[in-house]
Length: 93
Image (cartoon, rainbow, N blue to C red; front, side):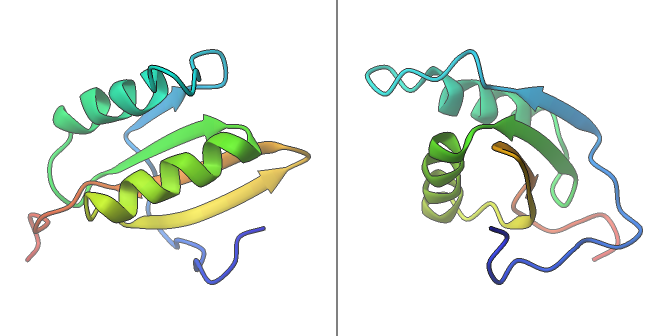
């Protein structure tokens, strides 16, 4: 299910966020907590988000809209791990 997203080598997320219990398509709480978690990261740092397959589509669309690259996606029997890179320039340029 990872499509064209390459595996990330030699990088690890600084934070992990589990949104599986938060998703409500009416109020989009999972998107809000992702936004909040990204605010504490520096540009170029990674956030790992744990969700289901439906959330995966919603989170990936939100990331495209706000230009936060999804740098890795793993689907382990319906548990989807998305690695999101905070947009902006990293400290190393």
